[in-house]
Image (tube, rainbow, N blue to C red; front, side, top):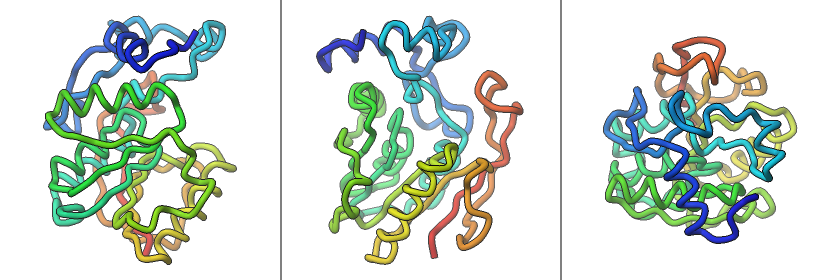
Length: 220
C-alpha cells in the first residue's frame, strides 16, 4: 500500500530507484528507475495490486528533458521569475528552472509520491522547490505565476484538452507558458511557437524509439 507518511514515501523511492543523470540534462541528478531497480520490473497491473499508482515520477520523460535543457541553455526565460512546474513528476523541470536562476519554483502534481520525489531530487541538486498536491486545474492559474512549465502533458485526450485550456487562460492572463512535447498524439498541431527542437535519448521500455525528436513550444 502507499506509505502513509512523507518519510515512508521517501524511503520507498530511495529503495526502488538509483540516483543518476538523465542523458539530455546531465547537469541534474534524479532518483530514477532503470533495469536494475526493483520498480522497473513491476507492471502497472502489479503496482495496482499493491496499491501503487504508475511511477511517472521515476522516469525522465522526453518532454521534460527537452524543457529542462531549454531552461538551462536559455536561463533568461526564468531568471528572477516565479515559476510553476505543472505535472512535475520527478521535479526535473522545476529543478532546471531553479538552476537557471528562477526566484521561486512551485512543483505541482496530484500523485502523492511526487512530493517526496521532488524533495529528494531538489536536495540532490542543492536547490529548493516548493510543492503542492492540489489539482491546479480546478481554478485559474495563480496570479503570481510569471512562467508556467509543462512537460509531456498530451498523452491522454481529456487531460490534454483540459490542461491546454487552463494553460491558454494563464497565457491570456499574462503568464509565459512553455510546453515540452515529443509528438504525443493529442498535442495541438497549430497555434503554438516552436522555440527549440532536440533529439532526446530515451528507452524502448518507455517509448517507441531510442531517440525522440522533442520540441519546446510557447503559447503565443
